[in-house]
Length: 105
Image (cartoon, rainbow, N blue to C red; front, side, top):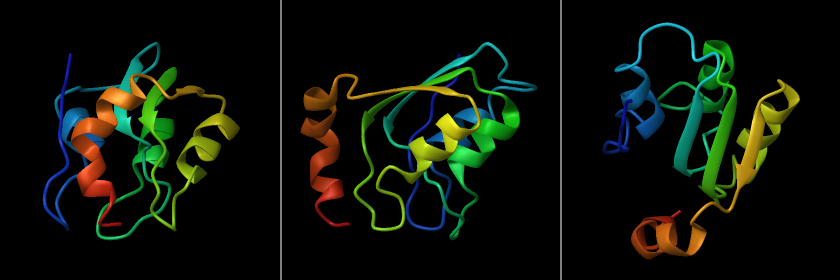
């Protein structure tokens, strides 16, 4: 089991932090995230592409990322690569603590 949380701008996203704790392939691994994995590389690599490269079996997402460069694109990349993706998992509960952050996007 591994866990992570997003660092201040320029630092690791939650997925990168968690993946550093988990060596090797993610084949057969179910990944649970509060916010859709990012699809693009900015100050950090694309989390969606990293999950694909590491072989994640399925990704369960609470909230779609409202960032203009993402907005479902991370989910699209995962699905196109054959990764099972489910969205809306505990969405209302997660919005209770992530909502204020997302309002700044």
